[in-house]
Image (cartoon, rainbow, N blue to C red; front, side, top):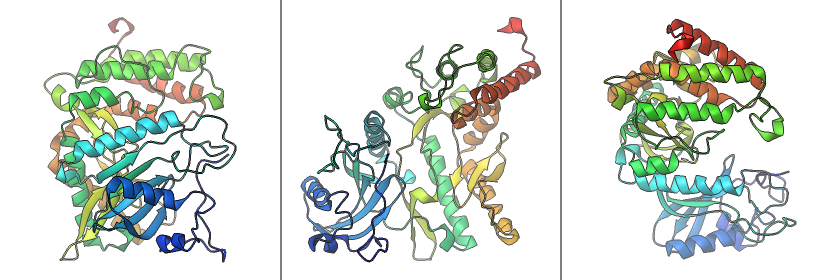
Length: 425
């Protein structure tokens, strides 16, 4: 089974270094010759951007996509993001077409939505094309690239993954900029039609088929969102739970936990004067970090964030559920009272490195909350709601009776601490 192409090797056995692809292609030595035809990509870009490709300086390989830097005859530099997996490949087992198509549509609409928001520095999308699945059996490698999603962007100045090359002062500068971008994204006002069209579609699995009330930035809808999510995740005893391949069903412990969680939901949604702050919708990047940013150096040798890209995992949530974390070489996160912390540390971190690293979340979150003080209020007010939401988000199908049993125990404890009796439901 396959979900992406392996990175190509050259005739001498070494990995392709990503350089001078156009020259290699013109001499009949494309390193991708047995996987996909680079000439088809060149032709598609030239036809849709109305300029000739005159150079392909560099190709990189991410986990799901190639990043291909192209120079055009009109002086423009672009980056093509082409999927490494083709839905028409034999034995393809990557994201299916019904997942990829709305993902690309959502991402393209996000770029259009944010084009007039300079503080968010979203990449400038020039052209995109949805993947197409051909009819019939997939017996041979496809002769075209139609089964690979494609997005083409104007290339911004800078490089990504520059964190390790920066000194402490430069890192502090970049963290402040990232905090401003994140604050600007938090404060961005999502058009109601966009939220209505995409909120349910961009939820993590398992998704409710519909909501009982219209999508709206209100406490009432947030309660309905939680309730629908619990109902979609834990159905009746004996029903499938999680993913089909795991062959798990709802047992009595998970079923009991479901009832405890449903009872708790209305009691952990704050009400009052802050409702407009807590339940307004926020557009989440959902993979916010240095790996999805381009960074240039200004005239004073200070880093300058120039582009925030890869919105393919983005979503929409009420502010009370927004996740402000940022990834550098570790994850900068907050606890339930909005206190800064580090997560996903390397086991090889030294004492001296740790002394520097512990300053990063403080610098980032102090700047973020100074720029968007309502963000901190929402995190603190939503302590219980966030605990439940992130527990649902982080579940990967493992031992549902134990996982949801523990969540049910937590719910019963909170109900007791909140003074909620059975008759209060």
